[in-house]
Image 1 (tube, rainbow, N blue to C red):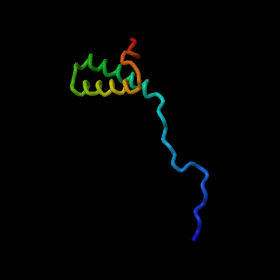
Image 2: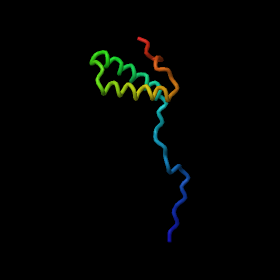
Image 3: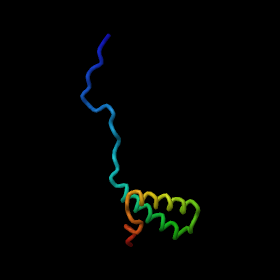
Image 4: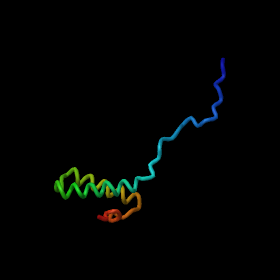
Length: 69
């Protein structure tokens, strides 16, 4: 029976990491707030804003950061 070849490279390669998650969360919050101004408070936008607020809290940021005009 043939032996398996020895591999010296990493077999389980991890996927790309995103280091811009907090930055993207703040950008999407700004976009959601602009959409709420235009379209009004739809149920979808309110739920998306709530989800986004939880993400920002998870990253340890203030929701008011990044809302400069």
